[in-house]
Length: 70
Picture (cartoon, rainbow, N blue to C red):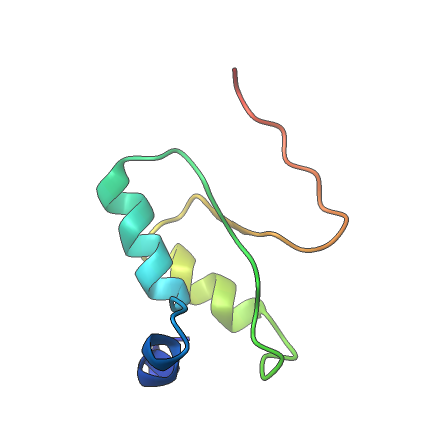
């Protein structure tokens, strides 16, 4: 999450907010974020951080199915 932005930069990852900003700037319809740090036992905060910027965000969790428009 954004409070770990320095750690994300160091490990060459993005925060949920950074991913959401990129999706917003790119003009995409949807964003699926995944590859979550083990430090996040609950993912509600991660999703909320991204959705505050880009409402079309979902969590890419194992077993979730996404239907894409052609």
